[in-house]
Image 1 (tube, rainbow, N blue to C red):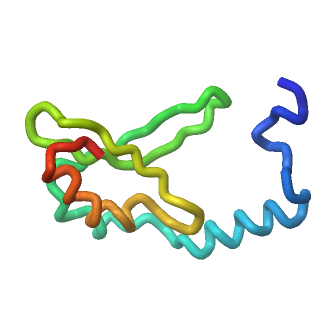
Image 2 (tube, rainbow, N blue to C red):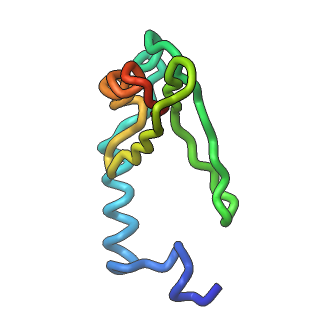
Length: 97
């Protein structure tokens, strides 16, 4: 992989970019299991990227055969457990989220 193609290559400066991501992580806080404790048909999932990083999240399972699938990618300073409650409406309409 060429240096320019590396996912670790800074696109907005070697100081500003790490600082921005540090601020985003700090603003997001920490995962809280209580946020998802009462949600039915939720499961924790993991995915390993090509560069061996592990990404984690949640899956809401629709009852029976799903009508479709909704992939949600939270933005900066947001954790998946912060929005899972609002996404139940899609699960209840037959979608895996």
